[in-house]
Length: 71
Image (cartoon, rainbow, N blue to C red; front, top):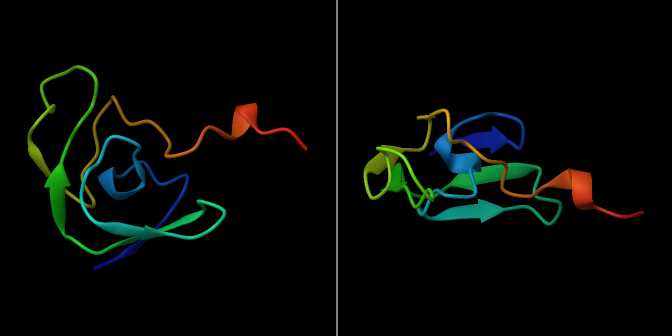
């Protein structure tokens, strides 16, 4: 499987992808353990569809929203 960065708009780095993945402690890198997983997006035509780790769609959302992080 592949390793993806947090800003790469692919299913493996999306909050809605339900494939197996390992996420580093900072949620900066995503290692896909499954090549495919179901999309659990809140709406749209991809909900419930099996998506590949490198696929993407307009409903992509980052795994973690850094704009709400406090320092």
